[in-house]
Length: 488
Image 1 (tube, rainbow, N blue to C red):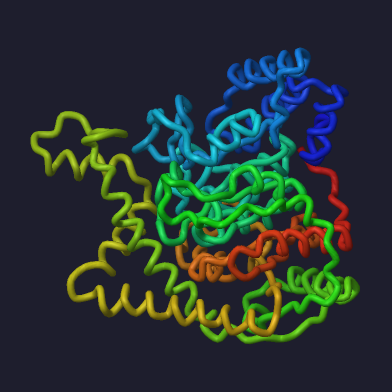
Image 2: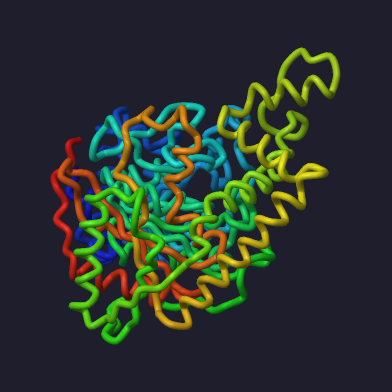
């Protein structure tokens, strides 16, 4: 691990501002770490070494001449999930169908990171079109968990979480449609935040399920995540679903008092299916909240048992519609030597899409088809409303909800790949926040006997990211989780 590997972003900023370390030194350090270990972890699909060093040199010259704008993330190297478009940099969504696609524009979040002075290290691997919970569904290669190279890092933002955990980047962006930031954050021992739907612009995020997708940050600490959210949050005229609400100063509010907060513990989130070591670690962490002056209250979320079924109707239905654009006509892969348009469409999609993407397109097309739309999609939409009502009722009694991020520890590569249903159940504690649109954060709360990370999830009411980060930071300080030495 390099000297800057696990250093908080705030501390890196201070080093740069005091001129104790140059931007070039810091950038080279992370690039060196990528060269050292990414052939084993495989977190990155694309590494932008030369452009990153060129930008670092420019920033150093500006700092030396006093011309630097001193942005929020000035000189901080970051990684971006490969389903977020980057101008002039390959964006594949880990799919053969977009293998050579180079976007002509930046996503809004990428533009905002650039405006804040951040440096793009590269694009991280993910499950194809963000469909998966293990980053094994990438068309190119599986990413491995830095804590155990035989295990998955989670998904679909597994590349981003693994890169941060391994010290290849101090922070990264991912996307979360059903837990795709929080679950890999838990598996890799990092902090991951899914903001409220509409808190961060989706313009330039390659769509999977448009009513569920949200971009969010991954970092080594709650303060890192707060800084990254500060840089990317806010309304955007190019995204009609982004919320026209002011962005709070997340970092300045992070040290507020948490005494007196009411914390709800949903009884449906604890029980059969939850790994014993995870439950033990969670119970110990939840008791720490009482030590911080919070009160605990058992609450009920009765629609939780229907969440996975609801999610795996709504998400594939929206994916079926969104992925119809990949037809070989306008951009992306195009099947060669086809005699007519119909065979070209079929061959292009057969060749370009992987097994999991095809499965979800077929499920989605089926539930949207005549005769089944009312029985499946409409019914799922009604259950989604009931689930949202569960949250509204719970948040009348408590300020936050706390529970597990994942039902199991990181599993072995290939262990669940042949059983899609077992893989889908990995999202049982995370999909509810996406269906309701509320923010959720995964925080490391311990390590298993095998030395594998365990994540705790905190969920909050709409647009309460500042209070959520405040509580998470207080618990992070109280837990003071000791990280074992990385084996790589």
